[in-house]
Length: 482
Ligand code: 4AD
Ligand code: MG
Image (cartoon, rainbow, N blue to C red; front, side):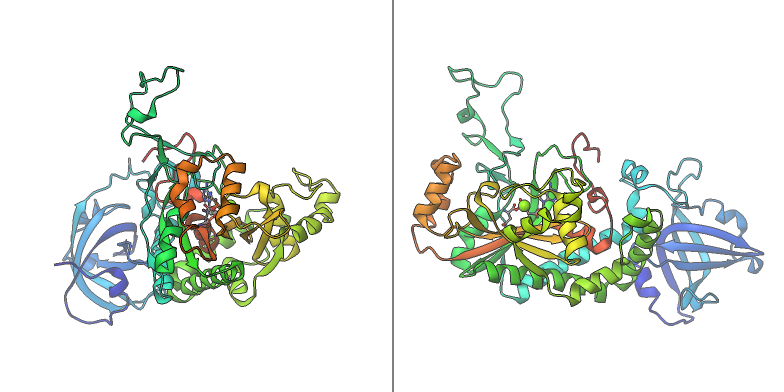
């Protein structure tokens, strides 16, 4: 039989009923002849305090020798009203059994402050810290909220493939999947690798996005979404890029870019509301952590809000919506651009926006999430719908304070001839996506979708400043340990 979780026990009124707890020791301290053991089982950020009265003689002091930080223990006793103010109840302990000791000489996670860099090196143990417990409970809560959001709105979850032969974003940053011998692959007469002899009879990669396949499903099921892992071999070692990350990609038939932007805004607000309302303990803890981190920063780098206030602010305000062209005008005239403070100067229409530009717009200029639309076609993917000006496409990026781009999406090119032209222009072999093109031949319709980077969103909600700290096992250039 499973023992009740600490989350449950902390909600249970005191009584003489015997109970059993299985958990890990966070701390142990002795005051006079009373030993206080803080127990955590991962079900909540809160600890259950177990009290052992040595004077009563039921538990000898020797039985507590191995009750040290990190040890797995089983305790029996009953819940009594707590003397402390932290919790309503505590465990009056009758027996204590060490299930798995954690030698304090060797255990790396002593109860003190550890840096996130150090904790990444012990990713197998960092789940046991308060911060990572909170982050990964939030990751779960947000996953559940995402499925609930779409389910409530009549979307169907589609599992799109992880191994593909197409490059959705056309960025070429893909991980190859092959079973050929790297030492002696079969070669064609011209010396290039003969991929027709590979496992799938062609060259294949890990997917960068489930969008193309989601579009196929949307053109029959109406409203669909994918939520799965995606892989990008970009060699960018930043706090916002991971080589393996999860993406949520809704795709909606008969929806234009405005509908798409509405959906994105509703979606983000729904998730934030969920976090604030349903995860108060973890969010309060993460807020405190965020405030402490802010205190270590220089005055001018500190954010104006704490985490909870920032999220409430996002919830209560309508997102700004402007075009790329308007954004360029704002940036061109901005003080940092005039004072040459940007690493990439904003000197002409057509440049790709860098994260410093995006962050200026959301953090300094508008001070709220901003949806940028209608980018130059040259800097966006082939599938975005061409505007009548022939220069811009129906793209949309949602920018969030502190993060920059959190969502990328668009209205899709639904016109067969225009899409073929774009595919040829971008030198994408037609035969590699004949099925995608054919969608426009039979029953084509206006449709739109977007991709939310799950980890970027989690950084936003939890206030964590590095993507490596919202993924259980981050994959980044030169790093794949656990
Ligand atoms: O803007 P992106 O490349 O858009 C797409 O992949 C589209 N196919 C989505 C769609 O329309 N269905 O990526 C979408 C989001 C970005 O806004 C960002 O949040 C996240 O994915 N992202 C990354 N997150 C972590 N590490 C990386 N290397 C990321 N690259 C993109
Ligand atoms: Mg993008």
